[in-house]
Length: 263
Ligand code: NAD
Ligand code: ZN
Image 1 (cartoon, rainbow, N blue to C red):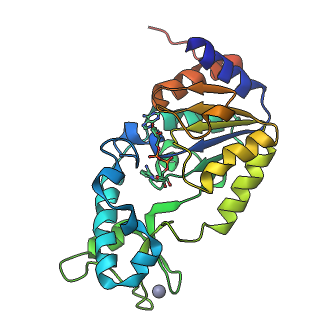
Image 2 (cartoon, rainbow, N blue to C red):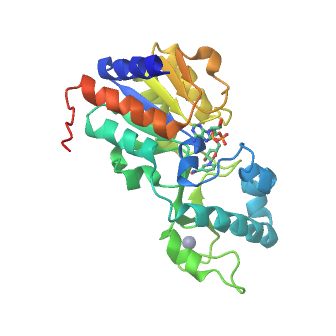
């Protein structure tokens, strides 16, 4: 394990363009459940209820959706970044992050200090709500505060259209700019690091394949097996937070920015 961590750190130090790609496993140590682990979201909810067509189909479906989405948001809104998020923010500070592609919707990378320009939120964000008709964007908290016995599926104050959290549901179009940019960065990086993703949700999960085909080294840090383990140059099956923190400790040393603590 120590040897693997040192090897990844060396690759980071030697690389010109490092892309980090994360999934829900990145945030479980912050108390946000992932989808597929025991006790995860799919143990509680029916994936069909997250379908975009279902959301559009009836007021009842929208109310169900908002009930589930509210429960998920409650687990996210006060969550704090963990050691893994902080390690990735440090990669940016060290000038070693070309881009961070996240499937997460919890906004924790920003709380950790990553900048807006380097983070591509492939599946949108739960921190905002958008009107599906006129595109008006609202702060999530403001809309949550409006939910009540009378208003279980809120509507746009500007046009009366349907409001939905600014996340991408199954069956909903991927955000164009983010998706195009994520493919472009994946194709042009020399090191692609996956953290906490089962790599089964497409098109997001195609990105490690794109990177590998274009000649990048592929590193996977994930507790369980992923759909791309067979492609990886190095795999660490362990907890994301401690592993990423340990990798960053070595990167810092390799780049000469060692901090000496005095007692
Ligand atoms: P997933 O649930 O399919 O896979 C998560 C993976 O992370 C699993 O393979 C699991 O073994 C691993 N994992 C869990 N905790 C870990 C830890 N502490 N350290 C290392 N590995 C750990 O999630 P996914 O691949 O991200 O894809 C599912 C979809 O989930 C994404 O589209 C995303 O939008 C959505 N989602 C996001 C959040 C969030 O924003 N935090 C939460 C739930 C789901
Ligand atoms: Zn509107």
